[in-house]
Length: 328
Image 1 (cartoon, rainbow, N blue to C red):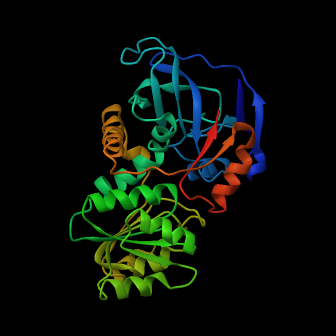
Image 2: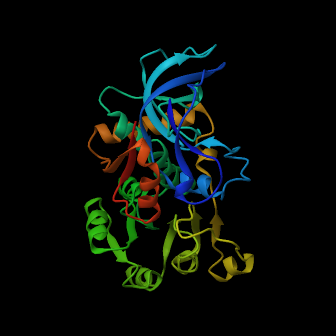
Image 3: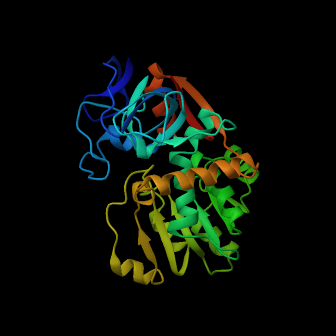
């Protein structure tokens, strides 16, 4: 089979299309013949070596990269009873999705309804589950609350804006251009800030009458951390769930106190979908909202598997206007 392999950590040119043997599923595993793979910042963190010491996302070089995919069940390992050959499935947080075939633990797979395309289902696995746990579990938004969500025109951002509005919250978002501002407004954002033209912390203060927001969802990291803290109301919560501009290297406990006795957390999605029941319940809710027309999934750009390096460069360059995919 064809697969995109990383043999050394580094830039996107470390992604190499190679011929690899088709793997065989072991006990409790499923062989998936893949149709599509999703591109996510976690792929860049793995490729660059940022997660090389992670226990949550353990890895050993060389590796087939990619953490999100969708396709059809090709073969079942011993003991798998809740899936059948030919079933349409999607998954996330399992290394090896940039390939024609992937072996995935059965508990990580979600059956895809016939009314949902495999590309949409894949987009709702990692990015959808991220937007869902942020708005529904980590800080469950309530009517009357206000949130700030960075990168509102990206794949996660567009979904999170919609989910936050479904929960009744007021949504402020930041974007990098007028084009992206229009996208965020189309998804329902109440206030859109172009961070290259305005100081977003000052603008948040104006919007909230000086009170600040209840929660900041920040996937940008290093470049936005300080102003994200300044955007919080007293005893607010800062959620740093990504590092598009680089990781936050240090957090001062006293700084959190001085910011208004605020809370800071750096979560992993894996801890919010730790078992099959939780994983499938989130997916079912996302599929339901999409089928009801309440959650729009924007499929932005697609590349063939051989162009994975170009696709990752587009993601790193913040060129995303929705979900980026590899067609396999």
